[in-house]
Amino acid sequence: MLADRRATGALHGPLGSLHLVDGRVAAAQSSRAPGLADLLIGCGRITPEGWAELLRIHGPRSRVGEALVERRLLTRGELELGHLGTLFDASFFVLADPGGGVWRFEADARHWLGPVADVDPARIRREVARRRQLLDGIWPWGQLDTAPVRPVEHVRRASHRPPGRRRRELLDHADGRRTPADLARLLGRSGFGVTADVRRLAAAGLLDAPLPADVPRPFEVPTAAQVPEVSPTAVPAAEVPPPVTSGPAGGLHRRVPGASLRGAGLPGAPVAADPAAARTGTPAGGTPAGTDAGTDAPTRSERPPTTAAAHPLTVPDPDIALLTRVRDLLEARL
Image (cartoon, rainbow, N blue to C red; front, side, top):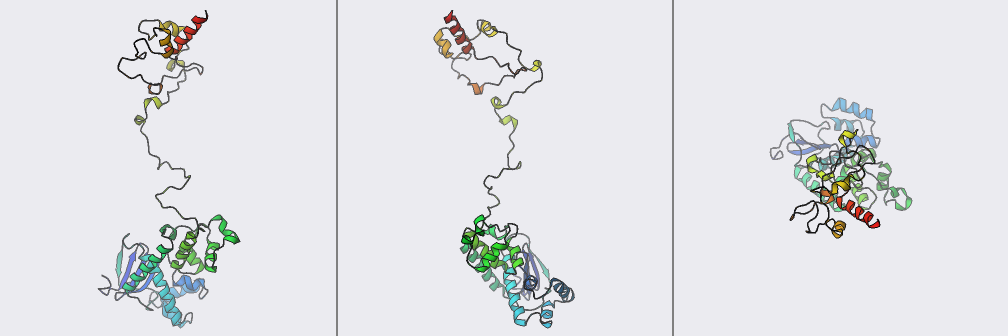
């Protein structure tokens, strides 16, 4: 739409800017691609101080490109070649996600470089699509483009060095903290070229490929925010540990020897009617002791826990059936 209107200004997106002159792309810049200044300083054509002075004097009038040629720092051909290379390089990253983020157009904004060479927007779109297809053909793993480059351990050995000086140089400067954009600026190379080499190295098994953000890493301890809260009411009562009190008031008193046996003969106490029933804990009627007919007997894990005794050696009363068996054994020995 801006091209059809022959608009002039700067189109700012989440990953950079495109500068238009009469609807054509005249310049581009992105944080993920080295600019012309990075390349010139990296190869030693100009010092950082010299570039800052050049930008301060000629930048407001959009004459930096002309000043480079006038001072014989670059020839006209070198300027156009370097400018077009950085334009296509930055345009790829600016348009990497055209549907994401907020875009705004700043009318009549001029680039500090000035008029050097411009490109038709349709050609920019075709080149971006071609480069994206090339990267996906190498290895379709977009997380590599922005994550720190981490070589695997054995890549330092001479037997595992990759072919080509360019890729070996890339591995030598990868320290696990630099991203492909950082390496491109450090080495004075194009951002797309470094990104393509990073994917080639990862496809060859020479880099640790980063995982997507929504996939937990192996052996990673989850944080407190990743662990869902469990309401106390959602825990079964049998699994809730009993409270420990500091005195005998909240626990059981020490048992008096024989108290359970004497209590077993009281009315209403569940005592087996015969020795066979005593050994199984089931009365003659076939219903488990302590339950009504037609209902399932609660298992030990389903019974509510008893209060812990204050004395460490005091335990809750055992089952009546067990005491009955002990009594029968003692009577048999008399």
